[in-house]
Image (cartoon, rainbow, N blue to C red; front, side):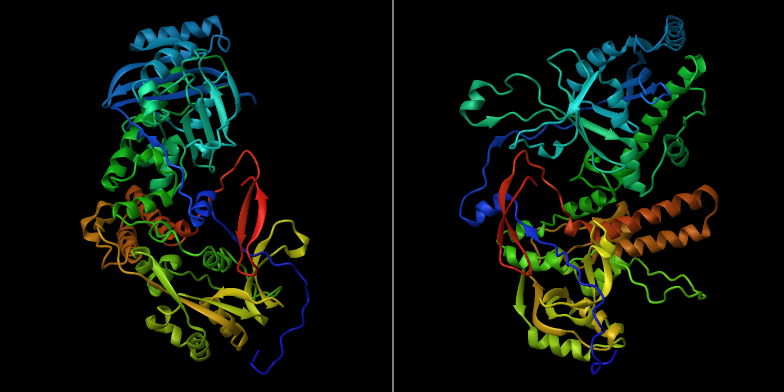
Length: 577
């Protein structure tokens, strides 16, 4: 299509969905001059040198009820107690005899489920702030429970994120807390102890306004940590093989029969393999030198990237510029599109070749110089309507080969769509869920897009979209107190955030690992391939995902909020989110 041609005819009349921005309640209060409510609360105590690793074996039917389990209680890595526990209602007298014989032969303790819960899980692990370790830990915790329900939290609870999860009651003793579990994804879950009954604060503390924090515990799911470090899913068997631990998981498949000595040996090995994998993963995590992060709070590859950001001392943008106008945030949010699809050739048999980009997200961030905004103490903006119109008019495919062109793309534009190809979020073909597609768009209401989308529209149609307004953003001065880091603990990939682009350095490290992988064979090649893929996912999430992270805060009751949109005036809305 040339600039003299008319727009294609409209074939569908669809409602367009546009992202909006709703400020958290305390930010709304801050805008009206009221302070965010504060309370004096002691910082949670860190984990002690103690650890408890355990695993359960269950029935093979749909109930998957507990039959027996194994555990290791350690201090500073040394075993202080190891044993077997069982559900008296889930095993026969003969099977108890098998468990007792194995325990006696190998110097292990034998306990009932209740004895393990009260005397080991709570009296030792909980009271001594042990790290509680498992592989697929939420499942094993649920097998220990004799009662479960929905996790409930108060509106002012610091663990409000648990609302909507499960609560498991493990002990009949009222002095011991329940455990709460909320799944975040297939690979990660939030796990914590609920508050205990009774008053936690002394009279003196209450008089001084000091609140004793709830002992939430320290839980590490080896499955989650491995996935975050390697950007790859594992079973315990594949992980123990990948890490080449001394005692990998054993093979055993006869779970539907009676308990045998071989089955018990398999279960005891599972706990040992879990511990060895945990120890290896902790060593790898420590090698990253993320001193501002803890492994129990690393739930995904993005957590590693966030750890690097914290380690450099970078303050998040919303904290450096809390008074940024909500209406401007709405414009930014409204231009954000994730995945999109387009089809140029339909229902034709063609010869094709697979093409790929090298780390597209961090590459685009590096070309645009977005690291400047990450390390900046806020940002400024100005109207650049005239300049942007001129820039768009002269920009063509050849000019995009220049890095200088990309540095000018930190601009949002309001356009009047008239047969221009833009990403559109709508319910296509009458589907309930709105998805994103690249379409010829004609609209009565002007829409906000990025300047990059306008350039793409021009290249695809041959005509520049009609720009009504343009806003360009500039980073503020570099934050003070930033610290250098070594990516993956490798001093050859040193990053000084004041002068170096972190996104670029991660990809350079990934490329060096890929080169070594291509020259390796066998297990070493597999290891290096996993390492480079983990760097790729870390780079992608750090350069893209974490900056538009949406965390849903579920509330017990509807509250009135103000919705800011890029296409309308702010309006009130009642919601429980």
